[in-house]
Image 1 (tube, rainbow, N blue to C red):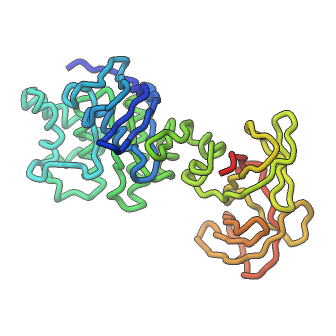
Image 2 (tube, one colour):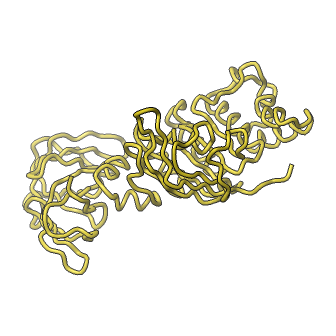
Image 3 (cartoon, helix red, strand yellow):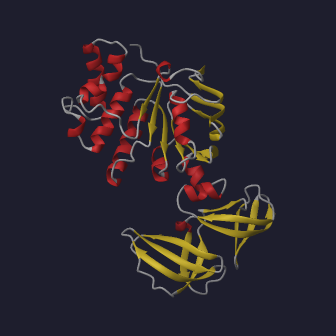
Amino acid sequence: MTKVGPASVEFRNVSMRYGAVTAVDNVSFTIEAGKLVTLLGPSGCGKTTTLRMIAGLEIASEGQILIGGKDVTKLSAADRDVSMVFQSYALFPHMSVLENAAYGPTVKGLGKEEAARMALDKLALVGLKGFEKRYPSELSGGQQQRVAVARALVLEPQVLLFDEPLSNLDAKLRRRVREEIRELQQELNLTVAYVTHDQEEALAVSDRIIVMSNARIAQEGAPRDLYEQPANAFVADFIGDANLVDVTVRKVTEGQADVGIGSATISLPARGLQPGAARVAIRPEALLLGAAGQGGSLPGTIRKCAYLGNHLDIMVETEVGELFVVQYGARDMLEAGLPVAVSFAGSGVTLIPPA
């Protein structure tokens, strides 16, 4: 078999309707060849339907889908050079690990020996050398996940798709397996579309993230851009924790805004906003607590303080509402009722349009 390189994926004004329900509404994006792009969003936002349209398991109602520049909009799943790793892994329980991994080439009509050779190659790649004769029931969740990845990789598809691949694993294993998927993707230069609702997972593995909300794209960009410059309250709140506070933009000079947050004033990039009502998204780690009475800060009172090992979670009551604060490093617990001054770090505070 000749190896075909990774391919780009392009959606042009794609919609998917089921009767009166629009699952994906006029969506356009590009996944560059050799990149891992995550479709991130809450349940029902359209991300899995989008993935299934790349796979050819759903045929778009409108628009065009291109893989490697070729229009595949109307092609069936079998006619696309794409493999999918399902949430449930979908392994055949009556087949050994080797037979599961060799399933694709066997169905394509390759000889048994060639199929086994290809399967052994990919099983070694995902760290399952020596597990060939075992059955899925004899494997841990993480090992089953790896068999599913090996099976998807065996035909060396142009595009590899992951649908919530880590949701059946416990937290520690999730971290390890997501690192393995990312390393494999980079080593083999794979084009990957990855669906998750877990924002930490998305931040950890992605070259780019497409955040979906109500069947549309809310924002797309590099993980850091989305975290540090969310386009709106939905993205700010969905990617990491954010305190969303109503504020007043007092004046804008050369792209910098003077922003009134209660009795405090800070200077922030205006991001195209004009004087008037706005909101800020404040990351919990961007709120700094000091002794009460400091000038230029927001007076507050400690409501709750919880010890979480490497950090404290603190709720502070202020004139702009209750604020969630995270303090990292070994700190003393703060007593409820203690008066404090709340100030703002140089980053982690972002202007967003009013609700």
